[in-house]
Length: 117
Length: 113
Image 1 (tube, each protein chain N blue to C red):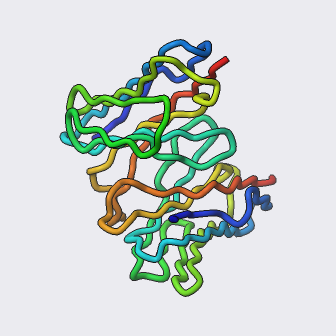
Image 2 (cartoon, helix red, strand yellow):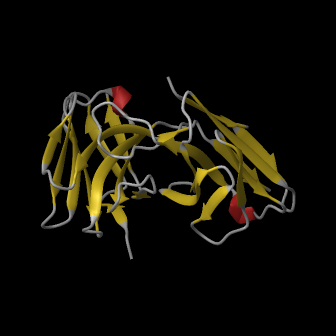
């Protein structure tokens, strides 16, 4: 079965410090991968998605970047964090079949909570 | 532009009652509409979806209704249980059924014992 791992689960970083959040997927090949951000009390905003190694599409201009060095690895980075980067970051993948669904359903990781002070 | 929104930020129901969570959308050209459940501190989990050419779909204790005339989507939970307490998001898939979902803001469901 497919699983998605995301780490670290919690992170407290000072303004101006770098960031690296990692996500890996197991049990599938060539998945589409996504990074979403969820601000407190808000919905999910798509930041990046990737359809293959080295292929990254950015959905919104921001202080963050993403990379996909391997088929099942997706990394979210920043060189210098801003206060506004605080939030709950969710990695997700699609491409598998969810029983009972015809949609291209996203399966999410457990999330990484980032607090920038 | 595209947007998906929810009518109420918080819904409080008594255990055993039925819950109805509503969602409005603006993009008529979506393939699927999906409901997710997010428990505190966790990632969203898929509940049920409905294709745009349907108006009703039932799952286990849940029913999703789609009214394309007024661009309205609802999730009905029968016999609500404490474990149903969570934030519920509606989402839509753009034409082409890609994974680039557009999410609403979320409704918090509180179940009172």
